[in-house]
Image (cartoon, rainbow, N blue to C red; front, side):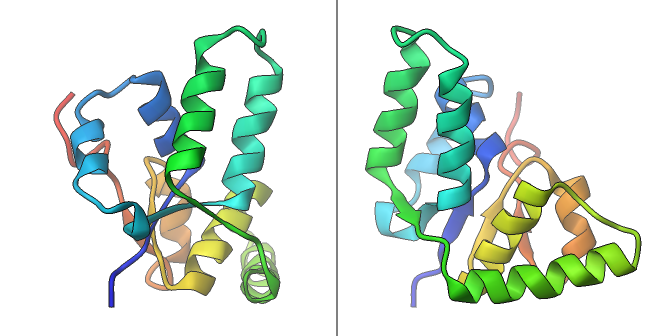
Length: 140
C-alpha cells in the first residue's frame, strides 16, 4: 500500500511562493496519488487569497496546486481523532493552534505522514503523528 503524505499549509505556502525552491524537486518525487492536503489547509489557503488582489499571481498558483493534488475531505474519523487530541492537549496544557490540531488529526485519521516545517508544534503529538520536514531536509 502506498503511503500518503499530507502537505501542511506552510509547506504549500513554500511551494507556491517558491520561498525554498529546493523543495519543489522533493514534491515532484511523488505521484499525485501519494499527496494530499486537508480540506482545512484548503480553507486556510483560500482565506489567505482573500487578502490579495484578484490579479495577484498567487491566486493561480494556489488554485493550480489544489487542482493537482487531492483535497481530503474532513470527515467523522478526523473529528473523532481531533476531539481526543484536543482534550489531551488542553488537559496537559500543551495546546497548539486549532487549525494545526485539525490538520494533525486529519493526517492521523488517514494514517498519513504530515509534511510540515512547523515541527515544533506537531512534535507534541509524536509518536502518534508521523512527521516529515522537507524544508529542514533540503539545502537553502
